[in-house]
Image (cartoon, rainbow, N blue to C red; front, side, top):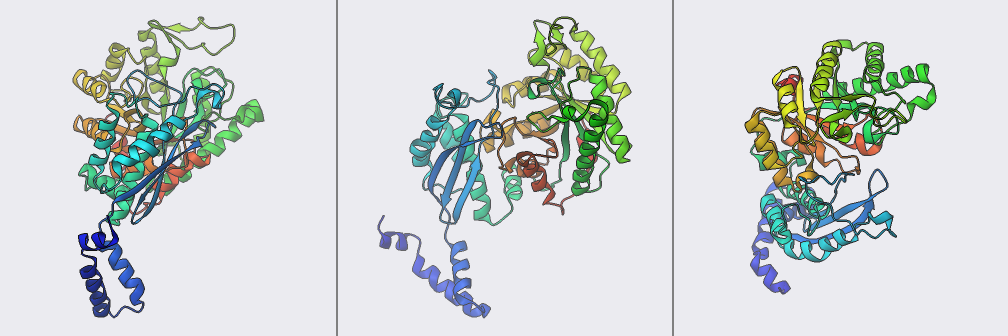
Length: 470
């Protein structure tokens, strides 16, 4: 298109004349600035370029970062990554060359953005999120996004969402709320990781993490303070009992004392909460990640303990009794993945007891088919939504709608491989998910999310929402 064609197409002569007249009417002190701003709003934004690169996530493993350009500016986003490749979740595209990042480089995914996705999206309106996402899905043509790679598709989808918000001149969370049709927005309860175990830490604790939920806070900034103070008191408690080496941390920033007893670590957290003085204002949550230590139909709670594996096998019923006992002794309001990802029977039975919120992560993997089955069978009562498990912003919005329509709780979650991108904070606020899980109240890639939620201090915080399903 020639310059003259572009001018004619967008009727720029008329729009410039209108801008000048508007500046005169407004008696603008800086007419040039006024006209410039007026023109920026008058010209529809379109995607002009999409450029990707390889960066490193919080584990030092490659992932994809994208710069999406419009005539309004440049918008950057990066895809979180995981150490899992579940059969029900979208697939990250990695090179597989062991001589480069041990096979984890993502140059093929980057090339797909720069050569295929960019060509398909240039000229599109960034406010039309579903059309952008659909164009990428049609370009990929696989059920799990294995052709282009979910790491490529998601980074572009997030960047487009940011560009759409800028085009509308609204905060990112508000644009997301508009896309989902929500008008009543609330801030989420933060679930701070304070103890790490399972595959996230080098200790002997089988379960993956213990979290604190400051449901007694009146504002999000107060919840942030309560989480931080609990974390630092816990550090002191662990140091006093086990020495400074007990304060090594896992991938998500939680402390990882070399303890195998669940009750022992819960006692540590309970003591830390007691020292803060918040007591009843803070509740506990557990991410068991039971699939990691399920062998057949049994659960090996000693799978990480040298020379003890197999000595602490528990049946599904044994695990249920253990959870009942823990919930009776400690202020636990949520348990994530209490059983194996295929153990629908015991998950359903435990959920049916109504003891606490039962969150499906490995069980459903943000997969619409799995979510629908869990809803139909009343298997759990809360969804853990991880955007790179599903792959696009539009699809994430849809699975959250599925869960909310079923009156489930919803937890927006980070991944073990995180970046400084705070997008999930705005996603959680825009969809009013009720809860956000982004790791410990330390480490920059985790705090980026919590600090971003805290930026929206003018929105209400109905903390009871997170327990509505429990």
